[in-house]
Length: 100
Image 1 (cartoon, rainbow, N blue to C red):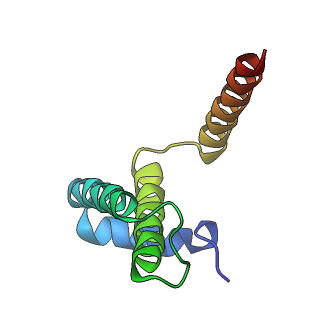
Image 2: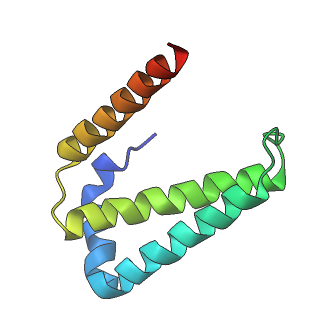
């Protein structure tokens, strides 16, 4: 399977074709569609359900749009990963503190 990182040239082509202003709006649209998909899916949704398939589709759309936004805004992916890891660590710490 081809990763988004290896499709960087293709993602740049899409961003340049449609323009950053339009793709920024598209990113917001896709994020709102993901929110709706999350709102519609049940906690114990069957993996074969239409709602589960829709959730995966919306997640993929958001990942593609976030890749475009990282390129447009020259966001350092490693820095985003570092921040995400800090947030995970902070949450785990809070969970440990809740146990005390």
